[in-house]
Amino acid sequence: MKFFLDTADLSEIEEVASWGALAGVTTNPSLYARTGGKLEDFESHLVRICELVDGPVSGEVTAEDRDGMIEQGKQLAALADNMVVKIPMCVEGLAACRALYDEGIDVNMTLVFSVAQAVLAANAGARYISPFVGRFDDICEDGVSQLYDIVNALGNYDFGHPVEIIAASIRSANHVREAALAGADIATVPYGAMKKCVEHPLTDRGLASFKADWEKVKNA
Ligand code: E4P
Image (cartoon, rainbow, N blue to C red; front, side, top):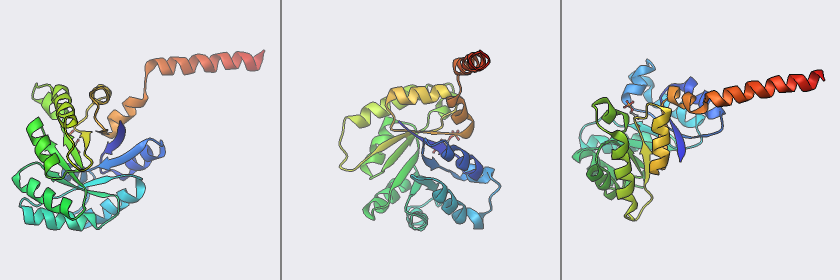
């Protein structure tokens, strides 16, 4: 499973990219708003992210009709070679996804919550499909089992083009574990949860004892 960072914050991206294990970035309008970014700076901000990351970067359309989504999608895709157009799951989104696929543009279909939506997205040409996990948990439903169902269902078919499942709306290291066990191709993880994935108390304890023992060697 590959790791994407789910953020539009440049310093978070820069830091995690330096760890050497980052394969891409996903953004959405809420994440960009959180940076305090202005409308006129949106595209240059995405270009900067594309420069920082050696991998696909998802930028989301905000138009609500298919023609607007297609126009915005083409504009976003032209910003950088590694730009992926993120489109929300809905009838207009499916139509726009198909049109962009026909133009050779990679689409990440977002806000996917069911097997039926995921299969439709794959048939419309989506290169990436993003089932949300945490938002199910927020309403006391089981996001992880939904993810398992989507991974299993899509695995039954060859859609005639590459399709990768991005486990999205990840809130914890346990969600990352579940995404990997479910067989998701990618987990897109916010900065805080990404840092938690690195940590383990037994790692800390092990490091402390190695350090203490090395002091004994040095003083022997
Ligand atoms: C997916 O690409 C979305 O940006 C993201 O994972 C949404 O996560 P949230 O439910 O924590 O907002």
